[in-house]
Amino acid sequence: MAITYLKKAPKTSSSDAPDVRDTVQNILDDIENGGEDAARKYAAQFDKYDGNIRLTADEIEAASAKVPQKLKDDIRFAHDNVRRFAEKQMESIQDVEYEILPGFMAGQKSIPCQSAGCYVPGGRYSHVASAIMTVTTAKVAGVANISVCSPPRPDVGINPAIIYTSQICGADNIFALGGVQGVASMAFGLFGQPEADIIVGPGNQFVAEAKRILFGRVGIDMFAGPTDSLILADKSADPEIVASDLVGQAEHGYNSPVWLVTDDQALAEKVLEIVPGVIADLPGLNRENAEAAWRDYAEVVVCADREEMAATSDKYAPEHLTVQAEDLPWWLDRLECYGSLFLGEETTVAYGDKASGTNHVLPTSGAAKYTGGLSVHKYLKIVTWQQATREASKPVALATARISRLEGMEGHARTADIRLRKYFPTENFDLSAVED
Image 1: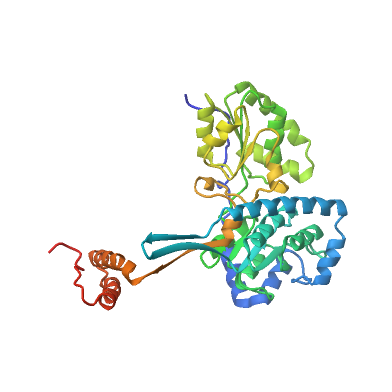
Image 2: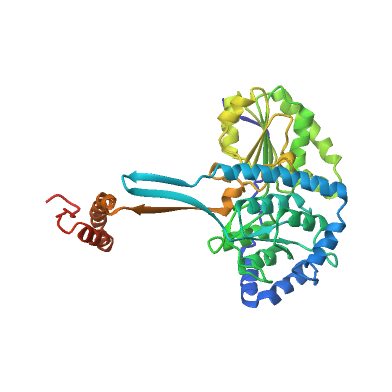
């Protein structure tokens, strides 16, 4: 049967996205040409900040002293979980050496990037967890130099908790720069840092566009849009928890989609009844964001059965996917398109966002159909190598010469020919691509 929408979103996450490309390109060009002075100019213009850009050891120590011990303990708890999970991911990456033919060896090895730039949002929300997710994984991957850029507040600077977190997670340098100017400083190697090989971390549409424009010149984690979340729930789900989890993700921003997919219409109707009250109970900006996101971007979908639910979820390919349903092993085996999966009522997206160990930098806008999220793997280059004896190179040289001539690439063919003549001067080889 066709799925039924009890609530259909009037907008998509890109339907009213501002066109920021020209603005971002102009700022990047200005900073590349004007260097540190231009970056300072934009820091003063956008962040109303004219303080020190590169934090000194004394400034880091002073900021760390302002962080309450209880919060420090929580940050260290989250950092330890993320670090241990990243170390397990590293164990899954093995160098390979394989004898393709007798005497002809081929292999692969992983080499970490030399320099990573981690962007940590600090405007609307101070994303301490983003420092944990980006810096920790880079450190575990073996990146030699890790820079952090985070938006300063006027006459204050970076949130002390972000500074403390960046330091304990392994940042080599911390810079009070937000927005495009922060991304540009890492890409162009300003303020005494090396040029970044890769830039990672979430940010607003200007940060995302800066990373998009710079991609190719530097690596990036992914093209990011507004965060999104989907919940798969059956009749066993608690509607109050479902409603709370939907609203908890909708508070991210006015255009953050949240979706409920279920095979139980009574559950769907109950969630629709509960959500407005959950939103109304939020404070200030959180409430405003959740109201707009729920009104304009949320959807509630009723399916015939769990297979149709799973197929619908894979079509959405959500950044965050929660399953509050019976037979969790079936869902784990069946579902294919998601950034991170949360199985059962006992876990929730916020756990992954903050402290459980998996990473919260994840693919949005359907990108989970083809990629996963940030991990140690993003900082590693998987490269290959080969080595051969002269005898082992013979069949490879023969095939290479003939395939190259078939393709019309005579220069390639002759690099094989010259080796055959040198190594086997008494032998006659048929190096033509076609039968005589």
